[in-house]
Image 1: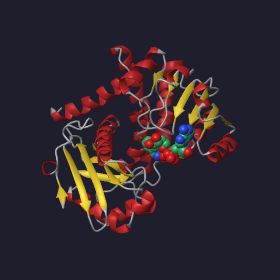
Image 2: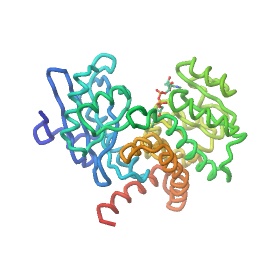
Image 3: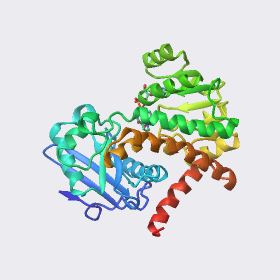
Image 4: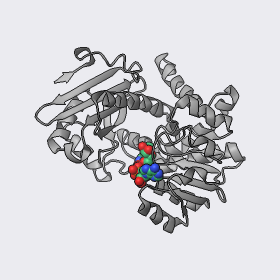
Length: 360
Ligand code: NAD
């Protein structure tokens, strides 16, 4: 059964991350052990699309906070990307290595189905394409299916391409040219997105410094693209023109920003600013141009969106191309209005939602 907000203890409305979410659904199934929360932040622009995260949260409050925060983030990401999608997210509480059974995933699919398409689920941390395939047996409201099932497959190359375009638009603003040949770029993280980005940047002729917690990934990428591997903490001290965080969130913080020598920050990691206001401002004061993460890392979700329209790879790439002009426009807005790029991006995202609400 679905426990809606009204039927549970209403700690939700006063949760710090609650931001007028339209619907928060708590899903429990004793037989399979399923404990999940689906957050639908907004459906103003269309069905709320956002991935399923399977994570061993220490507390339920932590899981709730995550789903509220992430679903809100999806509203802005989908809006600024021009997609006819609202923002949503789901979390399953538990260790992805042990909690995931076919039965549990199917039961989760039933809950998604009961929302009648107001929430569309997809992959996120802890969930694989195979899991989405299983969920899709219970509901058609899924995206991120493998290519063999008419889906767009691995989103990472699309995300990396979008990051490249956002980086180029920011470079144009900082250096007067979007030519990356000869530019020194520090890429943190050589995972799914990082390694594709490193390949694209090597083709552009950039000089690359890279790091990864899993050293073998860094050395593999270095050998393939003549990059230089640096230590995990040394990446912030590289005398780089551009820093591309493609590993963890919150790497732009009090400790790291004073060390950065770059003129541009542009990467794929989610929630790069430890504190949106404080660290967005700190970058601005230091004259560093920040390309907002939720705009330039949207290539993956744009590709997933195409699935809801009948998948077409070329159409995906064409839409991702717009990341360049949107980044350029918001950097101009940030300059004119004397606000941080993050704030400018949020304004643009909110405006599209407000216009739709007003019937414009
Ligand atoms: P991934 O797990 O494949 O890669 C992350 C890499 O970072 C791993 O290789 C890991 O070893 C490394 N890493 C971890 N801690 C590190 C540290 N301290 N220093 C250097 N490297 C470290 O993940 P991914 O799919 O490549 O995603 C990277 C980032 O981009 C994440 O923040 C993710 O949320 C975000 N993102 C990814 C996509 C996508 O399409 N995959 C889309 C949007 C946003």
